[in-house]
Image (tube, rainbow, N blue to C red; front, side):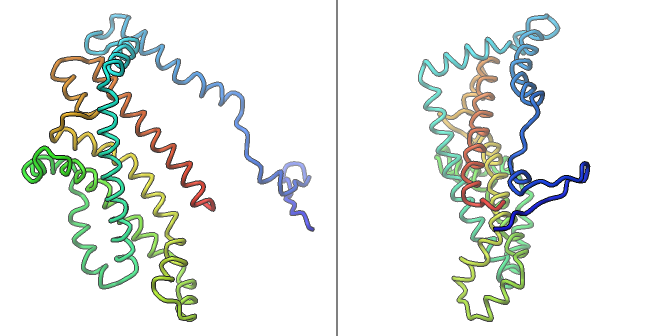
Length: 273
């Protein structure tokens, strides 16, 4: 068995393949900076709020935000708000992602579908979800369908465009080789197009994870009785700044957790990327 070697340009020595491919360890200074980043930020925030340079009523310290978050959780409404917000994100994300991927495959693979649908999607894609809030209230009232629709709208076009580009950029040699072997279209999709477009699809999916939480805010402002963004809006009306900031912290943690889960899953599915 041969061992691949790589020349070290500085010393002229050689590295074995396992030395080249092993993970690069972060410098200790970098790890220390990572560990100190958030504590220093919170300490600076606490100092600014208590120094008198800003109005503590409008910019409360993190201790007050933590107390508001604890009260929110102790009263039980946090878990109701969290559950409703997560369900809206999941429903809108899954429906938007599935439909977007399907539309992207159609426009990327079939010229007639591309010629018919792409101009329509290109016209609708720049319209932000928040612009639909008034008409969604008229269409769906205060039901959950309006909130699902707004999240769907934010997700669909991102996934459509990512999938469309991914299918278009699949190696044409692979497609011609499969066609020359008489591969049926459904097998072409499964074994050639989807694997080739998967890196683009995963980029679109990861981007859509963040977009889904942006549109969640617009969806819950369209009229809701539970939800994290709804609670932020109610806190704003009652001038509860600590509660508002606690809601923003929860939104950030939700989005970061979803992104982390997605990265772990994508490493197992699209491992070559």
